[in-house]
Image 1 (tube, rainbow, N blue to C red):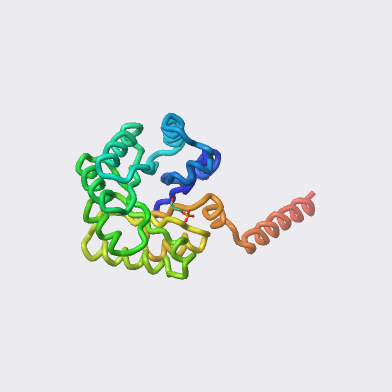
Image 2: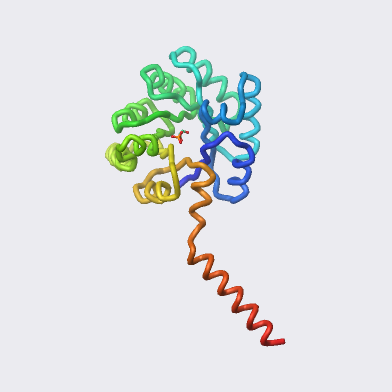
Length: 221
Ligand code: G3P
């Protein structure tokens, strides 16, 4: 399973990259705004800075909503760096834009997926990734993980190459559940990724190992 980090924060991207487990980055206009990145030139510079840190897979989202504008914006984003994946919203013109950009050899990530039918349409249009938002479904008492399971079944039934990129991840259990269900990718905040490290028995076990080693070394003096 691939691990993407869901942030536009360069320090957090560097920290995840340093951990050695990072396969990519997803951003969206809200995450860019959170970092105070506004204005076309700053946004472009920020995408380039992210691409300089990671090996591949930097999702950069279009902010236009019509077919003509989305393909223009998507082509310009793809020109920035071969690592860019153009993120397109699940709307009618978005599906058409995915089809067009796929035909031009540009990778796409169809975002704001909340139903299996939306994922199926995006896969038919040739999206490289679909991004179902688990946490936002859970937030309204709908089972987000069930959506991953349904999309996995549909894609496997027909052999779609489109990868399931589980997004809107809230914590480490979401990541583990996505792995069990066969999501191809998760994108998560750094806190959810590093939370996978933690277990109290690991900490107490390590403390005992080190204490025993110290005791034995002192006894041997
Ligand atoms: O990048 C899209 C997605 O992961 C958003 O997550 O936490 O805003 O629901 P969230």
